[in-house]
Every structure is written in C-alpha cells, then in structure tokens.
Length: 119
Image (cartoon, rainbow, N blue to C red):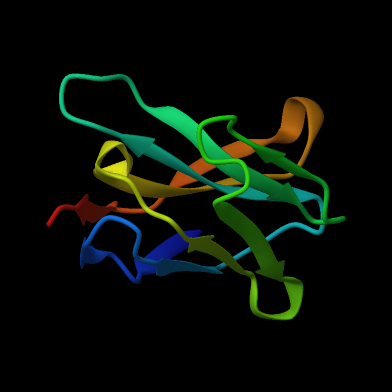
C-alpha cells in the first residue's frame, strides 16, 4: 500500500513563501512521477507542478517563475517551494504520485493541505 504524507501548509501574507513536502512510502516503483495539484473553492483541481523520477518537470503557467518543484529520490519525497505568493494561490494543495508507467500505472493522492494567502 502506498501512502503520501504532506506537510508545510498554512497561512501566509501576499509576497511570502512556503515550502510543501510530500513523502511517499510503500512500494514505490523506479518509474514514477510526483507532483502537486490544487483546488480552490468552486474550481476544478488543476496541475501546479510535477516531476518525473529522471527530473523532467511540468510547471503551470500561472506559477512559473514563482514556484519550484524538486525531489529526493532516495527519500521518495517531493518538494514545492512557493515564492511571491498571491491571494489567487489560495487552495487545497494535493500531492500526487503516478506509480509506474504505461498501462501499469497507478495514481495515489495525499490528504491535501490548505494554503491561504491573505493579509
């Protein structure tokens, strides 16, 4: 069984920074992608950033230049460094793991962590 444990959410003022962490445990396959999605009230869940086991990344245009995704493969942990936060970044952030590739892939989600950007 795969589990994802997130940490690092909270309340921050506009222009501030936060770092999210997500540690995966269980049977983690060598080919995988870890990432972050977010969902604001009344909106659909959207991709924020993701990173493959080889280090390739996809970053949403809305956060490019402000957010950085990285991972520690030895720890099966993914990080999201969020700088210059804006009120529109307020959402529940979910960690995601796509375990494996092709037709053998499985999706896992963390419990979500609230980020509130407000003065």
